[in-house]
View 1: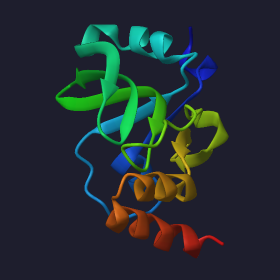
View 2: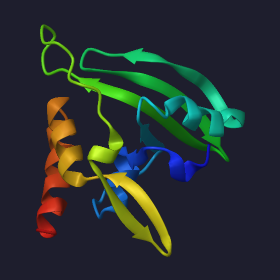
View 3: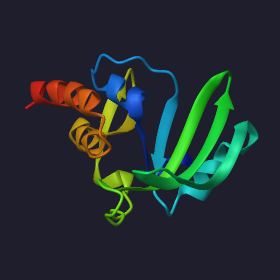
View 4: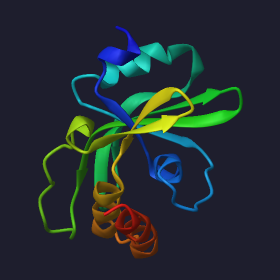
Length: 142
């Protein structure tokens, strides 16, 4: 399946950086839809360091895989769900296309999760400083 046919977007520090947030980028985070995560992992199969599996923490869960491409760590996730307290249920899985915007990088159209969505997501998991950074930049474009 070609990359253009997949529902995906860059997220994390790289997605924020491409939208003007002054953050250090240490890896590449990709969020795919639950429908397309297996195809996305297959496209990156030769670079796999941790195969696709369910990942769960106190506040988030998703399908997750890790890759290394020319020394760059790439993390793929799908079906991202969050909860705000340990007794709360899980949110509905996130579909990247619902929160995706396109950033132009030279002549390349790069899908990224919007700063507004990213700020809300960081707030929900208690990363208030990063959420504030994203909101400050997002506010410049309104």
